[in-house]
Amino acid sequence: MSLYTKNSILPLVFCVFSIGCTVTKAGDYNKSATLLNLLAAGQTQAYVYISNSSTSSFGINPIQAQVGGGFSTLPEISSSVQPAGLIASGIGTGHVLSTLSNSNIVQIIQTGAQQTVLKTIPVGTNPLEIVVDPNNTDHHWTMNNGNASGIDSILCSSEANPNVSSISVVHDDPDPVIIAYIHASICVGKGAHKVAFQTVSPFLALVTNQSDNTVSVIDDDSNSPTFLGAPGINPPDTNGGVLRTITVGTAPLNVAYSSFMNLFYVYNTGAGTISVIDPNGNSGTGALLGSSLNVGKGYTVMKTDVSGRYLILSGTDTTTYSSLAYGILRFLDLADPTGATFGLTRIPKAGFSDFQQSPDGKRLFVASAVSGTSTQISSINSGAFYIFDSSSLPNPSLLQTAMVGSSNQSYRTFSINAMSGSVKNLFVPNYSDGTVTIIDGMSYNPLTTVSVNGNPTYSTIFQPGGADALGGMGGMGGMSGM
Image (cartoon, rainbow, N blue to C red):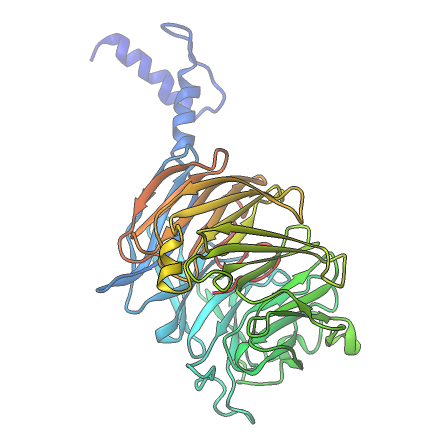
């Protein structure tokens, strides 16, 4: 090594530990700044988790997103059964919670370069969706959908009415010994279930019970004596947490809360109607408000926009034409209680599934899905991902269609990785291709495709430096359909 080389390295080594210093040598350039930029670019900005399955194995595939824009895969977190729902903890513990439907458990995963399953927690029968409670962000509600008849024989068999299923509230804890525990398990109606949360007093949560045409009203106010039935840390299996059961339309599944209207909206999939529930009715235990709104069948996902003023429904029209499917989006202006003020978007040779809005509300991203007859399915471009200008609701405009991988499933979701309110990347699992497409948040063009093999489905994002990520189990103002 020459003397010049030795002298060049020493200031650089010193500058790594002295932030802000300047090296002026051989061209008067700032070597320390360059080195620090390189170091920063290699730092982790986010971890993306993808639930996956194949004919021979199951697991969760982590993808590391770097500050500088690079992506790398990490070793798979293997599982004995197929993982389903995924959600990053709402309190920054570095935990990811995953439901294992066939084992009736929730597993707690430690994020980072070395992924570790910290704990498994038994819940009810067939847990699928898991969501963060916005009122109590250390709580993660797990939908125990029950068996084919919507019955949870694990938690609800000893109830006065055993023919129902349940929800389990998993309390995530920063204590490295406790890690997580069940705060409450509440038997509701027959599954499948979705949940939405009121974010002002009286802080109700509404759980849909698809198989018995009802919704269960639960007290989610942590200062209330009936909070989650007030069961304590080791709760009995109880119906005591249900304040009221409200009968709605046929096969209710999707439910959303509008902060703009302070009302709940329940989409009855079997009737093609929306039931409106006033959380302040019946002395703060919820009541039906007026007549249901007719919107039609075929929708599978319903949420409010980021403002809470517009109710968005996504789905596929397979009834108008026998040989052609249309992706459909309906935008209801909730300021009009009659439902008469709305926008309708129809895209031919398409099927629409999960959607999410950018944090500023200017863009709406819609994933494709397939449904209908074999002829209709063959007409759908299952590799399309749609970007709409949603700054002028209820009448959005299609800006761009990005091509991702293929999925032959009737439901498809994705995750948004955002920084400081701006979309950085979108991660789209491609079930049929065994890949994940990563889309640039500025140009909306695909950046790269990462192979994870198997059949990737659900996803979530954990950001070590903050939580701007919108997970692939819902997001926006309501819960998604699956």
